[in-house]
Image (cartoon, rainbow, N blue to C red):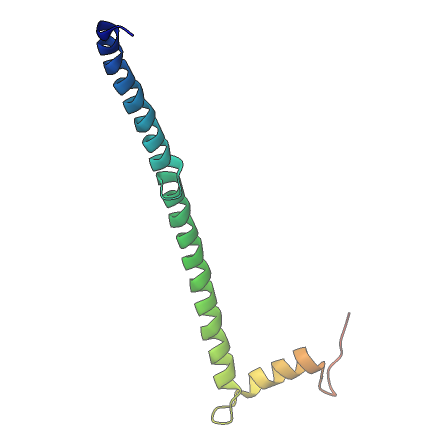
Length: 99
C-alpha cells in the first residue's frame, strides 16, 4: 500500500470508529440496562408499588381497628353482631330473611 494512500484513509477509519462507538454508547445510554427507558420503567414501577403500599397500609389500619373493636379490652357489640351475621349466618328470632 502506498504511503500517501494510507494517510488519506486514517482519518476515515478514525471517524468510522468514532461514529460506531458513539452510536453504540448512545444506544446503550437510551435502551441499555441502565439507560433512560429502563430508568423510566423503574420510576413507573416505583410509583405503582407506592400506590400498592399505601393501599395495603390503609387495609392494615382498617384491620387493626376491627381487631381492637373485637378485643377483650374494647368490645363493639354492633360490630360483633355484624360479624356473627356475616361469618356464622346467625339471625335474631324476630328477623325474617328474604333472598
